[in-house]
Length: 290
Image (cartoon, rainbow, N blue to C red; front, side, top):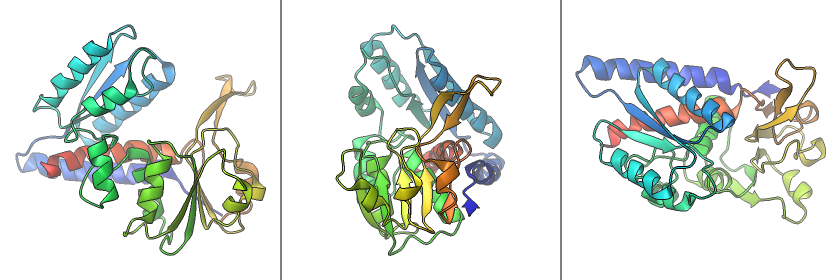
């Protein structure tokens, strides 16, 4: 069994990006600048945003964190987004999800300029992705693709099963795996928690990508011998043996599934770091797409 080490792979990507940024600066060109909008003080969201800011520092990007109170109105948030859309100093920005319940996430997604949508969520960028045109790819699915590519995992002609149909991960993941490219050219089955015969379908997968959002959902009897398993989920569960009082687990029962598969991504240290690396790749692309 080979561990798909997202942490090590993301570090390699960051080193590559840092070299490109050095060349940009040496040529007198603009340094990529990523901004992040954080609404409220959710602990997990703050951790994610801080990780992205630190990644910017490592690769030599400029970064700006816009921290807005949780009670801010939807109108005020949309005004801030419009301000960043029109700020030439900012090459790309993200709005950290989830948002407070009184703010419509769909409105926020549509408000971000497609030219600066480095999360790859805007419908225009999703449409370009479907047509295999140059665009910002959704960060997590693109991170999974990059991981598969760097571990030389053959996808062409393989049966890929994706569990989960979210607009952020599952749906775009299925499209990217089916596209004509490398990685890609897979025969894809998009499933979810209500799919009939889900266990049997998963057991036919050469590549199984779990993004269902349920801890330890994928068990060993759902995995074919020698399959490649990518775990996108991350959950915090209580663990009195840990100093922090909790541990992180994924959508996959790692202990038992790892005994059957050829490759598997861990949680933590798998897809999470690759998502941030993908965000850095998109921000660099923002300069190139201009």
